[in-house]
Structure formats: structure tokens, C-alpha cells
Length: 449
Ligand SMILES: Cc1cc2nc3c(=O)[nH]c(=O)nc-3n(C[C@H](O)[C@H](O)[C@H](O)COP(=O)(O)OP(=O)(O)OC[C@H]3O[C@@H](n4cnc5c(N)ncnc54)[C@H](O)[C@@H]3O)c2cc1C
Image 1 (cartoon, rainbow, N blue to C red):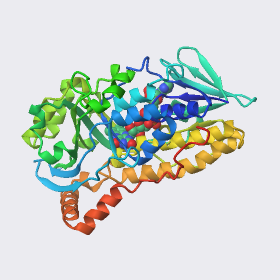
Image 2 (cartoon, rainbow, N blue to C red):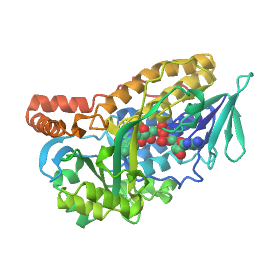
Image 3 (spheres, protein in one colour):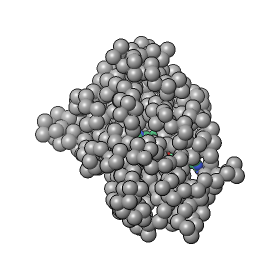
Image 4 (cartoon, rainbow, N blue to C red):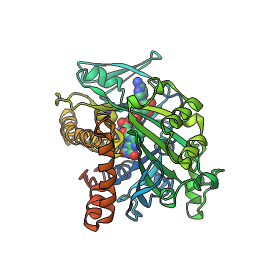
């Protein structure tokens, strides 16, 4: 059996590792020209579901490298006003376990981990255009450079704007969630560190601002210094031996982002870049604390990025064929719950298990794909719905309405303040934060791996 994966992102690369580990032939076709292209330095939170999928699919040494390259785990979840007045602080769990923990990861670093040792599997510079299914049960993918690839299974792992999904499930809908966001990255230096209160330096912080603006601050500290040398001698051997560090430009940084309904930003915000985009953030956040404004001012113009947040509509189940989908290609979601990448990784581990069992002859291929889809579609779209409901990542949130906005802001701040002070409410809040732990229900190792 030969599997063609379109898209070398989080889910596609995890699947490719898992299939190779299980002895199944696999090739990945990625639109970027090389492993150093398309590097985004922003944070992604990997939870136990994501860790467990990576542990199952990556070779053990590479999983250890993944753990060694994560940023320092946040110690607090904080809520601030736009003036940096603290509304609430929740101490987070002391996550030391390699799998049962929340990890702060740079997207660029994770990407380099996933490309490690895969030079013979990944074909760069291949922009998928369309596919053809043949009577003999094979499928061919065509690329913009005029080449093609034929296999027994084609997996769409090509993200939110999936070209495979547009052809395969043309009735499926990706929708604008009504939110514009600007994300910035500021080098972490003694000067910028001093601009934040201590809890914010050691944690994840939500900013509930007036005028319908929400912000997020993450401080990312990596196990290597500004010159890329390991800070901790314990990791030195592993990091020295890891070729991915040569391609990875992640250095300690503060990730400050702001989002709101589209109407709170200039209409052409998503076309703006660099210094102009940073000026836009400063303009909409004109009443924010001088420390936060200074972080915007000191941010790297090259790294500032605008986003229009997307979500997807649930899709009716379809009849399984030798084409399937994973991650954002099928269930793109807002960042409200921070689980898009984790769900893509869960899909990858589950699909890997099913394809490996078909390759071994334990079940017919279409039954394996059907079993994967019957499980993935319900949990995937449940995460889409949960995510839309959270942290104001839907433009319909009362926070953004002219009349209810002030009331909703007052209610949100009061909720966090009371919840953090009443022990039973605080426990429940933290339990909810970790609600997805163990939700994947997959065994620890992939059969046949
Ligand atoms: C602001 C923000 C914050 C987030 N924070 C979190 C978080 O904390 N935790 C979390 O779990 N998730 C988070 N997410 C979501 C997460 O980043 C995505 O859900 C995840 O990357 C999806 O993985 P994927 O493999 O499906 O797609 P991607 O990682 O997007 O990979 C798709 C790949 O396909 C390639 N591709 C696209 N089109 C083609 C084509 N035509 N031909 C060939 N290749 C193609 C792309 O270049 C890319 O490499 C966040 C998202 C956003 C926007």
C-alpha cells in the first residue's frame, strides 16, 4: 500500500512518521520550496492528546527531541485588563510528564522536528491542483509544476484552504468567524521582560480590554540562548545532535496578539504588513497600558501577521473512498480552545492506526478509512463548536456588540475574578481547562509500530 499525503504541516507530517514507523510506504507533497520556508514563529499549545499522538508516531529519539525543544511550561493562567490590572490568576499544574502535560511550542520548531529524518519522504515545491480516482482503486494527485503522483490512498492534510476538500467535498463550508487578529513577536530581553508583571512573565495571559478588544500574551523561553547554544547542559547532547536547529530561527520572545470583530479594525488590516501593521495594533489599542504598547513598538516588523479567523460547518457523513482528510482540511476551527493542532495530531494517530491495520490485511482499506472517518468527524466538529464558543473567537460574541459589550466585559471580568478566589470554582475551572486530557482513548503504542 502506498499513501500520498498532501501538505507537510502538523497533521500530515505526524501521519507520515507514524506510517513509516508502521512499515507503510508514504510520500508527502508540500507546496513550500524547502524545509526553511513558511516558518511561523508563533506559539502553539500541545496538550496530552497532541503529545500522545506524537509519541506514538515519531521515532522515540525524535519524540525526546520534541520534548527537549519545547519552551518553558507556563506556570499561571492570568486575566488582565487593558491597563494590566490583574483580574485573576490561576496556578497551572506542574507539568513534568512527557505526555500528560501542556507544552508551549514554537510552530517553527515543531515544523523542524517533524521534518527531521524525512528527506526521502517529503517532496517540496509541490502545489497540489487536483486529483483523479481510477477504476483500479488507485488515485493520482496532480501538481502545478506538471508532475503527478499515484498511490492507493490520498490524504488531504493541506490545511484550512484545502484544495483536496474543495474538489472531494465541494458542499463543505469554511466560514469567516467574524474576527480579525494581529499577532506580533517581540524579542525577550531584560528591557522587554521588565515591561510585564511577574505572573505574565511566567504564564499565559488573556487581556480583556474595553472597546471589545481581547489580547493574549505568551512569554516563550527556549532551552537555547540567543546564539542557539543549549542553556542547560542536560539537553546539550540532544540539541547538538539535532539538525533541525540549523533551520529554526526561534529565540526567546513575547507573543502579543489582539483580536476583535472585523469592524473594530481598519477594513484593509489583513493586507497590511510590517511597521504599518504594528501601527494599526497601536492605533486600536490606544488606551492599553504603556508596557503593552511598548511591546508592540519593539516587536519585529517582519514577524507581525494579520489574520481573519476561520471556522467550518459540520459536514454530513459521506461514503468512504480511497481519499480522506485530516486536521484543518476537514474541521478548521477558531483558536478559542487552542486545540486545532492537537486535533490534527489526534486525527493523524487514529488514521495511522487504521491504515496500518489495512496494510497488514486486518481489515479492508475502505472499512479502515470509514472507521477513521466515523470517529474523526464527530469529535472534530465537536471541537469546532467548543472553539467557536470560547474566548471571543466568534464575531457574534456579545463582547463585540455596541449595547451588550460593556455588560459582557463586566460579566467576563467578574466571572474570572470570582472563579479565581472561590476554591471550589477555581478547581472546576482548572478541571475544565484540562477537560480534553485522555479524550482520544487510543492505546499508548500503535499496533505494528
Ligand atoms: C492564531 C492561532 C493560534 C493557534 N493556537 C493553537 C494552539 O495553541 N493549540 C492548537 O492545538 N492549535 C492551535 N492553532 C491551530 C493550529 O495551528 C492548526 O489547527 C494546525 O496547524 C492544523 O494542522 P494541519 O496539519 O491540519 O494544517 P497545517 O499545519 O496548516 O498544514 C497544512 C500544510 O499544507 C500545505 N499546503 C496547503 N495547500 C497546499 C497545496 N495546494 N499543495 C501542497 N501543500 C499545501 C501548507 O503549506 C502546510 O504545510 C492555532 C491557530 C491559529 C490561527
